[in-house]
Image (cartoon, rainbow, N blue to C red; front, side):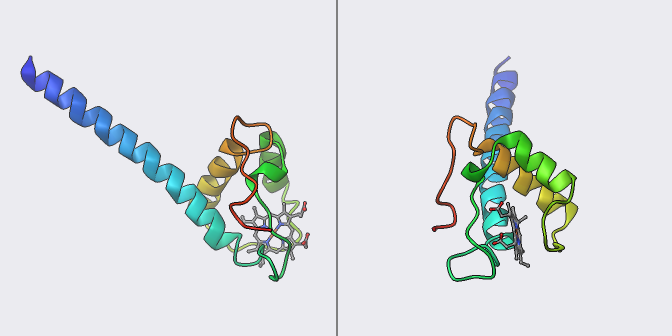
Amino acid sequence: MKKVAIFLVAFSWLAMTAVAWADGGGEATFKSQCGSCHMKGGAAAPVNPGDKAARVWVKYFKRQRHPVELEVSEGDMDSILEYLEEYAADSDQPQMLAIPK
Ligand code: HEC
């Protein structure tokens, strides 16, 4: 029984760490992949998750509305989209200044 408890504690710790890592990963990927152009004084104006509602972000990239072709891997794009949705304008915690204006 004790072993099961230890296993459960270890497992939930691992699961939480994985979630935390995924979060940080999304923001870091957004900043490096999108922020390279979208920054103050850069090729394009700063963008932030709080600029659009979650479903607008998804549509924007699904329908390839972005005016410039992006060289972002599918995996990176997935984690960026996850991050954009989590902090979108209609989320509980819209984020406006990940890339300062
Ligand atoms: C190679 C440079 C470059 C990269 C990388 C890039 N963009 Fe852009 N993006 C542009 C340019 C140029 C425009 C059009 C000019 C503008 O709107 O400032 C644009 C426009 C946009 C717009 C429309 C602007 C608006 O106000 O609606 C959004 C949204 C956007 N980009 C999001 C992103 C996201 C998210 C990423 C990362 C996945 C990204 N971009 C990566 C260059 C880039």
